[in-house]
Picture 1 (cartoon, rainbow, N blue to C red):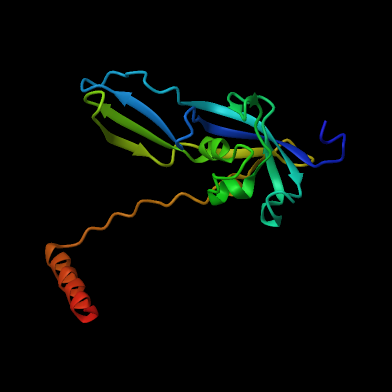
Picture 2: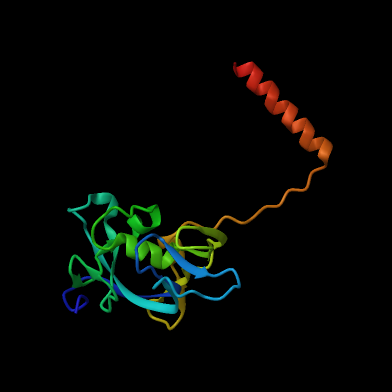
Length: 189
């Protein structure tokens, strides 16, 4: 319909799409001390989810947020009392501006939530035992114009994941670095 009105529109597929039911920007899993799933969270991760993007000028949010906007024709949650999603600016999602209207927190979580596993000892005590910051929002894609090729647009939604860098240093190097830190502290005082 939007294309018929002359509004640029494209279909987007997000693989490992988070469904953050409680909008805490994480997908939480709770287990007991034996490792059994407790089913305390309605959060989930879908193999993929599809929505549309359309190109809008955002006078309501400011020109920084002009450009591609997420519109989901199949929203799974109510927004302001009705089933709707968007238009959420992809720039807002990439920058983590989750305090904007139009479901920015929900879309941000769909592409960038952390998957967190908690062990629940009692109703009042839980402990985070695992967190995966890279699982969600993979190969965010659209179809190339004029061909059936996939175009990866993940960079429109999120910054590249930082790779873990492991450092192995000797104890003497570590001890010397502590001495250097102490010298800096004394100099600053």
